[in-house]
Length: 247
Image 1 (cartoon, rainbow, N blue to C red):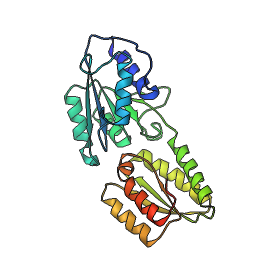
Image 2: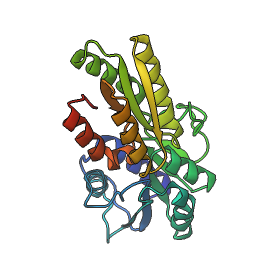
Image 3: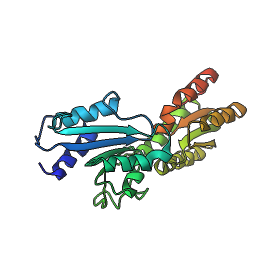
Image 4: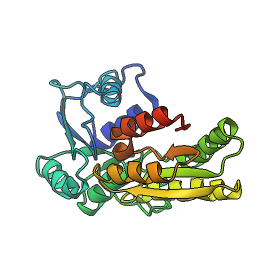
């Protein structure tokens, strides 16, 4: 089987989940994955789905596929080094979770990058266009910006007199920053004041909690990425204690 066919199946697996078994191959392909947070390994929900989908398409670990799941553990500065390591180990493709990871893979000229959760790849200039991406990046373009705005509408239904909404997002992620800006514009259109609580690392959440303690918001909206997901329990606990709606 040619490498192009393997990559086509890989992208399909990421988008659609398990289906009927397809191709078989005598070659062993090397697949890596990289996230800013926890590894996308077989024990994680998404990692399990990915490997199961590939297996049902004829690519099985220890038969014709090796899988190397790596993660930065919240230390985004380590991403270029981790990408170089995967490339040096001969990865045929890397599943990149989030914009910072995908950007690091693009700059390192990894043979093929399958992006997931990176936001709008055209707006962030990861690719030239959806019809003709160019370069080495493929994957999924999502509509999470629209979904973030809809979440704000749900919050307004829970708090009809919404006046102040705290918004948390990863400042280092261009894709997440764009989602934040769209949500913030929607909040202001509803007449609400936006508490801008951008974070870059886990320690920044201490300042976020302090700011919301001093100036209580009517609601909390988090733009979900690896950084906010890894620290959302602290935010939800804070919101629960104070009976503040949070999404």
